[in-house]
Amino acid sequence: MQITEIYKSIQGESTHAGLPCVFVRLTGCNLRCSWCDSEYTFTGGHRMALDEVLEEVERLSPDGGLVEITGGEPMLQEREVVPLMQRLLDAGYTVLLETSGERPLTRVPHGVIKIVDVKCPNSGEPDSFHMENLEALGLQDEVKFVLSDRTDYEFAREFVVLHTLDQLSARKRRVREIVHIVSWILGNWRNGC
Ligand code: SF4
Image (cartoon, rainbow, N blue to C red):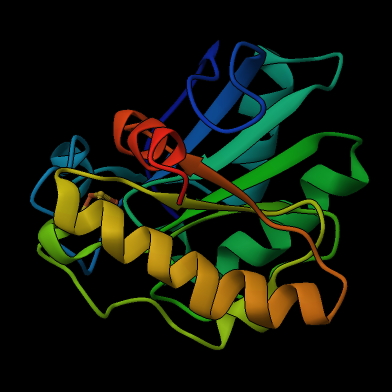
């Protein structure tokens, strides 16, 4: 698979923030979000066999722990990244998959914690979310909205109400949303809505 970098750091996002984590960052993305901070992953990288990736993860974190598969968009390399995630699970790692939400997620191995973007209107990639992915979400998964302004906030709020909560709570699922700008939420709260 095409890899940009593998390194160990502190997880900065999701409910796993603050924990040591090995990041496996795959090369390539088919989206171009206006606020992307990973443009260096769009091209380049180097080929690594599955066993080489596993060896590097084990070297960086020999006692197990957290591994995040990210990019770029890792699911563009589904054929190789799905077996990689399964091998990491089998080896006892806690595996996070950070994905744009644009690729189908039905083949992601059970046990992988999916952190799924829904791109907001001002992302530059509105309507890219693969709606069937709602069905692939489980109790452990997380949905992420990156907000740049009030329009994005209202979109995220409506999406959660119209799609996530309505559809998923009916199936007794629970989805945690991570909202990066909270002032508007607090404003709604103060106004009683
Ligand atoms: S999906 Fe992620 S990597 Fe791709 S352009 Fe958007 S933010 Fe950047």
